[in-house]
Length: 115
Image (tube, rainbow, N blue to C red; front, side):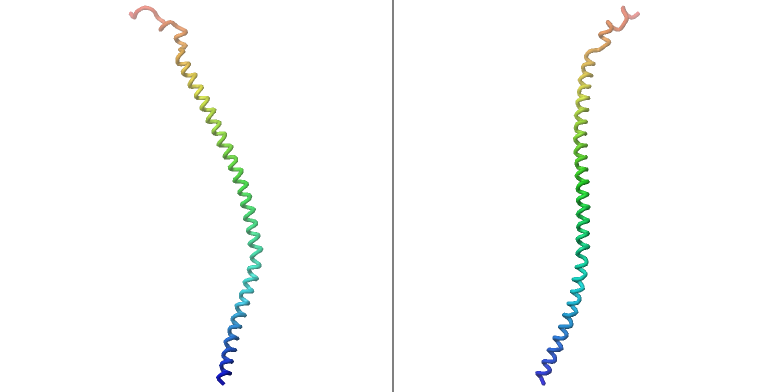
C-alpha cells in the first residue's frame, strides 16, 4: 500500500507540474505572438526615425555652411572697414598739416595796431 500511495503522490505532483508548465507555455506563446507583431512596428519606427535624422543632418549641414559663409563675409567686411578707416585717418592727418587758411591769406586780414 505504501508503494501505491507513493506512486499516486508522484503522479499528482507531476500532473500539477505539467499543468503549470502548460499554462506557462501558453503564456509564453502569447508573448511570442505579441512580440512578433511588435517587431515590424519597431522596424517601421526605426526607419522613420532614421529618415528624420538624415533630413535633420542635411538641414544642419546647410546651416553650418551658411554660418561659415556669413563668418567669412563678416571677416571680409571688417577688413574693408579697417582699411577704409585707416585710409581716412591717414588723409585726416594730411589735411591737418596743410591748412587751407594759411595758403589763402597772409594773417588775420587787418594791418596796424589796435586803436
